[in-house]
Length: 209
Image (tube, rainbow, N blue to C red; front, top):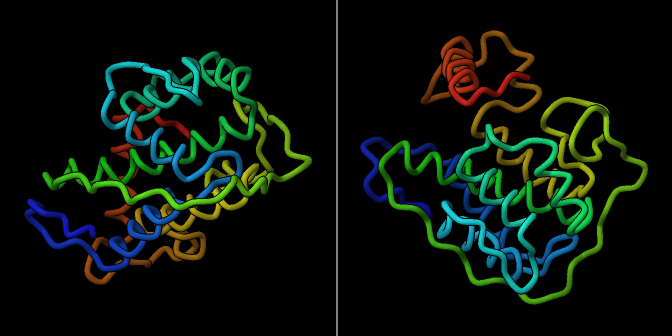
């Protein structure tokens, strides 16, 4: 799993490990969706990036959110998210956002390296966990969130938030790594180089935080 076939450069072991854990997370039952529903969603998003095909469990608004987030994230707006939340509820909408954003990050890395996309694992059996935080609210945001920076944005669903953060760190930096001005990866970039890549990517994607 995650051999990055076709990549012209080696990929750090910690990144591979993070991706494997993310794939296993995809296959497990989530807070509101079964493992089968989660894999169905991700398969549909990857295979139908130019359409908004719904399925037996997710309607057209959720399909539109997932497709747009995967293929053109700058086009996601409050209306798209609100329509999905009205159709499926906030928890399922947040679960979809978490799953699709993590998939887009991993697939984007593969495409940037010219590597083959990784196939999905078989879904694990079981009912949704129902683990949903209480007391969160919209803070000039499209979804209910706790106070804090970007890495906690999915914490309406603690398990999805934890999975997102475990992917966020290896792909960028963890919280404690961000506090170190002289941080660098071995092998890899130093802090200044990371920020140049990060800011250039943010500007290209119109992601202004």
